[in-house]
Image 1 (cartoon, one colour):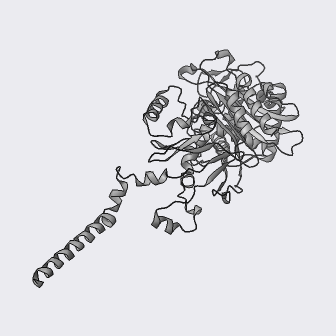
Image 2 (cartoon, rainbow, N blue to C red; image 1 turned 90 degrees about the vertical axis):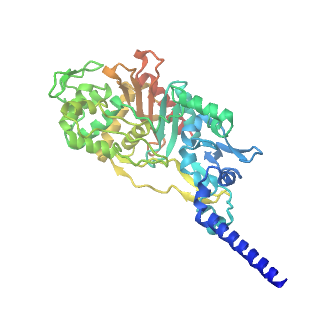
Image 3 (cartoon, helix red, strand yellow; image 1 turned 60 degrees about the vertical axis):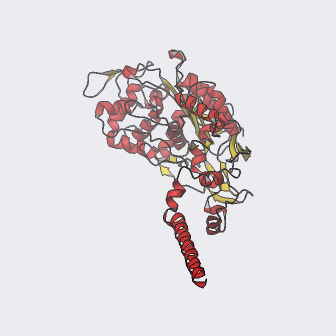
Amino acid sequence: MGRHIRHAAVFCALLLVALLVNAARVQVVQSGRYEESPANRRESIARYGQPRGDILVDGVPVTGSRDTGEQLRYERTYADGPLFAPVTGFASQEYGTTFLEHAEDDLLSGVDPLLTALPLWNEFTRSRPAAGNVMTTLDGRAQRAAYQGLAGRKGAVAAVEPSTGRILALVSFPSYDPALLSGNDAGTERAWARLNSDPDRPMLNRAVRQTYPPGSTFKVVTAAAALDAGVVRNLDAATRSPAPYTLPGTTTRLTNASDGCEDATLRDAFVWSCNTVFAKLGVDVGLTDMAGTAEAFGFNAADVRVPFSVARSTFDTSVDRAQLALSSIGQYNTRATPLQMAMVAAAVANGGQVRPPYLVERTTRWSGATLTTAGSRPARQAMRPSTAYRLRELMTDVVREGTGKNAAIRGATVGGKTGTAQHGLGNAGLPYAWFVSWAQGDRDLEPKVAVAVVVEDAAANRRDITGGGVAAPIARAVMEAVLTS
């Protein structure tokens, strides 16, 4: 009898050992495979088991969370979704995250180690602290003014504070409601398919992810290069520029949209946007100095983040003299995001210094306690302070007596530059209307806002697509919103 009991005991012990070995195999050796298995929903259940942190504008949440009562319990909601979509992006149970929802996902989903004093304990217990919040730099009034100013036109607006780089507005149109993508049901799938097949690409963030030929707004950069290089020393001296101007090494004749450009002064050429003058200036400055100035403004930088990535604005550094002439008037391979051109205007307003743009002012715990702040950021000198001073004078002339009169604001000094950029095969595409500007209230010690607007409205009359006529009023509305806030 005792022998049978011993045999049974040994057998049970072997079974226990086998069970322990298998448990170790599953939990240790093969844990990675099971954790990464699509069938493992534990991480998703935990991720959506508590409300997501909020993104705030002017201290007010523009996001929220809705209790669905389902296994993936909390679903993202958005207030004024289309207005803020270029900033928030979406947080979808099915399609992941974009823009701020992606860049700040650890904080917003509650897994950031900064949210807990005992991260190892939370890792062991697989619990999450309450999610944190993201305070943006946006000015809600400026954001709304930009969105309403586009008024159904395809395009984008970017506005920054010149002295700090704080992004005050970031708008892209057409837009979409991110709430359509929050869930994981059939309606979400239909919305995803519809948005991705839309030829107007509403999910494209044109303010930071689309580059355009900047056209005549790039003449701000060319003027800065010419002044810094000493090619031009007197704003009111003749530039010895023919009109039309034959591109070097070719028989192609470059013309102007306005009269009076032959041998014009830099002041007149800037105010009336003479292509011939600035094309010749670019050639006279030379590729090395033109490229150096463009890159000092931020062109060709591949690592711009705000905190999500920004498309690279480009100035071609391998061009011949004819191509350099076209590049210097914002054509050929020169391309820029609206945010980049807002930085160009901001540099003029800020004494020649470029402050890196940023969108997150600070992050906080759910209780409101600060976790991180933006802090001060190093400036880059794009041009001499004296050059910036003279460019402010030129840009002010554009608004006071030139092509940018529609941007004038009572009680403020406004500087601007219009642009009408050609594109497409043989320049057959509808031109893009540009306007870049800055504004300083009469009681302000320094300029408070710099703006870039681009409009690509294919439904408009071709003759109406001008920076001064279409884009300048939008910029004015944004500047007014900032100056009066």
